[in-house]
Image (cartoon, rainbow, N blue to C red; front, top):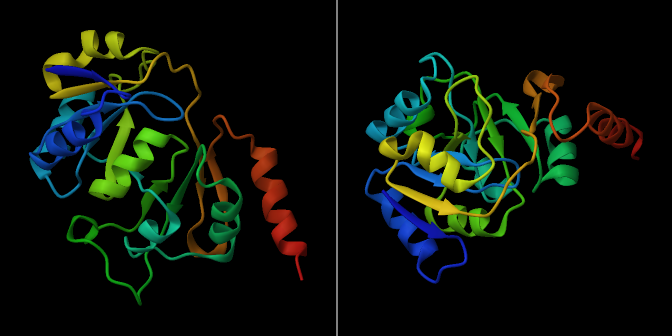
Length: 210
């Protein structure tokens, strides 16, 4: 296992290379440290489940660099989803999408009914997503446990299970807020660092717009 700081000159290229080789990487985000892999590498995705002890039936969230990158997943962008994305992406909002019958989707999403997607507000991570495309990313902790605030603590906890750790300093943010936007409705499934009231206000404003 190798540790680099996010400001190191070779950190971005090294992270992209590790992911491209089918590795699992610890990355800083705008909320907490995450475990990341390319979704097309099934062995790497499986390694994340093993590292966390995550139940098999719980799909991994996906991070993308932009709404345009999210569209390429074949998701259905309802009015509620577009309003929330316009206001809160990039940011601590994860949206659960259904799929559009008029759009193609990647093979790794072929058998899914929905997918949770977020655009993070983190310069290093956004640059990485622009470089390698969508990533599956989940909090860097054993399932159900608190995520350590520092890269060193994550490495001590999960180091044998990961190939590279990117140190982004101390991260003490709350998880993102999770909102389901399938079927033209919305439901807040988890309130995180973005208050439920902010979600409701955004959608109310969108409804009032001419």
